[in-house]
Amino acid sequence: MPEVPSQNITITTHLDTEPLHAEQLGHICAAWANIEWHMYHLFELMSGSPPAIARSTFYAIDSNRGRREMLLGIGKVLIERKTDKTALENILGRIGKGSGQRNKYVHDTWGVASTEKHEIFQIRMSGVDATGTMEEVTLPDMKATAAHFRKLADELNEFRARIAPSAPALLEKFRKLPGLGLEFAPKGHPRGRKPKGFHGLR
Image (tube, rainbow, N blue to C red):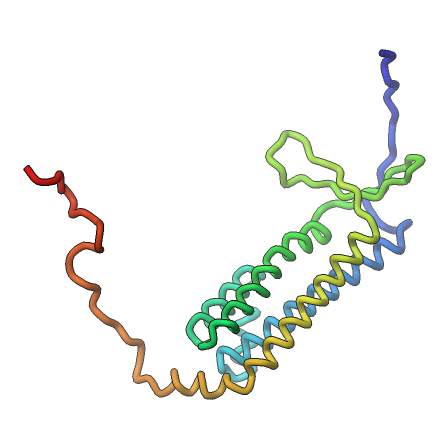
């Protein structure tokens, strides 16, 4: 087979010439910020903290993962209905998956190739291989991501509205407790577990 001649390709690492991609990137960032906003309001409701305390606590955690874990932790104790607990876990789980998408769009380097196809892509450098990859980014994919983030924000808002009527009574139940309850662990070994050094009957 004849050898394919090499070709020098100029790549620009900004979106100055691609206003439609830049616009969709802005929509993705705005939709994600709205998710974080609704997460904060849910934290304020479920924690029962005054707004200033809730704000300083929530935003002291920088990562979305940390904020999700706080909401999950409170929800496991506060929320009584299993269906509501499952709904919260489901929404936060999908937000967790979405955070990976958001991070790629925001943190990975953009590239525009000076080829006939005029590819618009991002450089993925987080793999384990010795080389990075160039992944094409299309406008339909970006629009779908922004729409997905808007849907997650709406679901968070709807969930907060659903549990809001019962939240004060649930919080009051815990405020009436004298403190954190403790109990002794059962003596001996858990069922089915053999003591250290056990070798069976002799």
